[in-house]
Image (cartoon, rainbow, N blue to C red; front, side):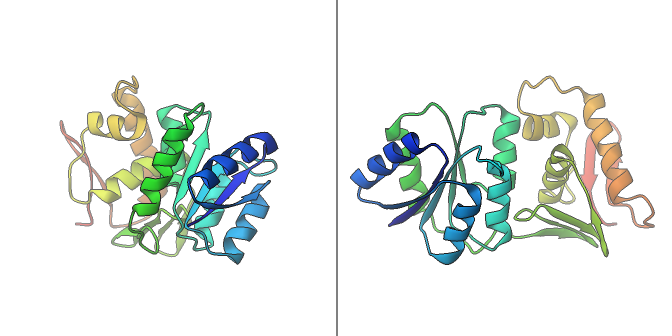
Length: 223
């Protein structure tokens, strides 16, 4: 099986390439994000390992670019950033797995093997309700014919609501799924993000999609 390793540190790249080849994989490397995207478009790989930041493009941008180009190859992201927000950002950008550095080579090999076994689908399906649509691959959100610009956190909250249409999500659930358990995000912070989403999603539309269920939480529904 063929692996594309996008790595901007030559010493680490050489070590990872040798370790993966010892496991029987064919490994090709790219020293920057643009080169990695070009190789991924030109050739077929079974797995992409993304070890960044890479100047002039960071890991999230490269990951989004790969997905925007229609590349459905599993992506294993390596990063020294280890907060829940960083992991969620990686997954929302299109990564299939996220390994925090430093890591044991054995862990990397096991994660890679697991992704290579996983049955793939062409792409993560877009989500929609009424005239609101969200594409997780490109992070594009539209309401009718209008593109909606969202921050990373706003996108994560909306994505969560869209994955559970018609289901009331409590503030505690939103906190746990977006900020992480024990994050300390207070209810007024979540309320503030919902207000921002309402301004961007519902303002100017007769049909409101984001609803408050008093004492329970928030729900996305078209009726």
